Length: 212
Image (cartoon, rainbow, N blue to C red):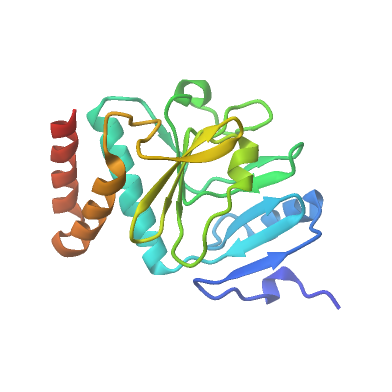
């Protein structure tokens, strides 16, 4: 007997993997779970992953997203932050919900759009994943051609740049090539645990101005 998805509980920090899930079944699950859910979904060629984040995961997601926004504001570049929006491409049978994401280089192309179609519209320029309980797989992001993927595991920031369809680790960010962000970001994340969010943001903005 098949259990309805709402009867399955995924504790925070855990994952549920379902295989042989058709695209239509994936769409039905999205609709069933609704917009207010806490779980994040990832779908690739029939494999569906459902993950429920820990509070620590959300703390990292928010502060790192705030750092990215601060950089973009300091260098005066228009951007659009779409958080954990579901990005999907039926033709590729791929879908992903990043912890956070930003349109930067392609912001003007999707400015004001209420619905995005990755068969027509560009993917996010930067996606962020917090890898506290599991390590983010590349395949969704590579197939959807997201130019830059950050993975943060609570100890370091890993920057991955898309080259010839595959991710290559980089010491510098494609979006922020003039900032040595990888090492600095972890230090500021740790500082926020001691000094608080607002004091850390002020110090981070000052650091960005110094680097520029």
